[in-house]
Image 1 (cartoon, helix red, strand yellow):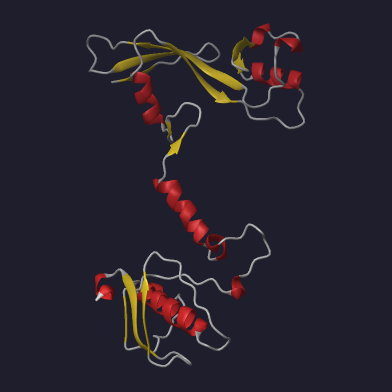
Image 2 (image 1 turned 90 degrees about the vertical axis):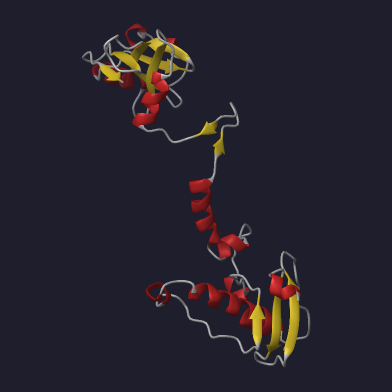
Amino acid sequence: MIGASGRTISLRGVEVHNLKQVDLDLPHRKLIVFCGLSGSGKTSLAVDTLYAEGQRRYIESFSAYTRQFLERLEKPAAERIDGIPPAVAVTRKHASQSSRATVATATEIADYLRLLYARIGQVICLDCGHRVERDSSQSAAARLMELPAGTRFLVTFELPAAAKVSRDEQLVRLKEAGFVRLIDNGRIVNLTDVTHPPLLASDLRPPTSLCASSSIASPPAASSKAGCAIRWRRRSRAATGVAAC
């Protein structure tokens, strides 16, 4: 029998409401429509039988503690129901006024799918084609240690937008905080040279970045372990040294 192999939903002897000993095989992965007059048993078969049994079996797979917080559905009156997966029902009571409503939003599955894709999905940058990953201090240090000796690099961060603060006032605050350089439209600008506003191409709005440090990757000393040492030279802060071995 096809139903025993799991490729169909097999219903035998269904007697839900006005259904009388209905036997039916429904193939998986097909769009199936129940048609008929009012009172012919469409809802009894689709909702009160298929959905109710699929949802009931899904709930039964949870622990007894979890089941007490979920809606309990009665077992449909049928001799046998085989091959039925967990089910979701969208009825007229779930009607939404939004033109963008879908089955996923109406049943709140969209929230779980969003979480699932965020956890297992891979985000690819459309510009460079590389995978977008979340960095930590350890992963950033590992990438820096892979740089060839003598490579110069900058550690920057995006300048937060300051509300109701003029550009000149913001420049003064940055200088007082000890910053000496920023990246304005891809151009490194020394804040000590910014004496006139036309020297800046933008209005200090994102994606303007501040340079936190100027650094050089250098090979490790002969007595150190295998790895790479990184000299951090902060011209706007007290000099600090960081080594990774």
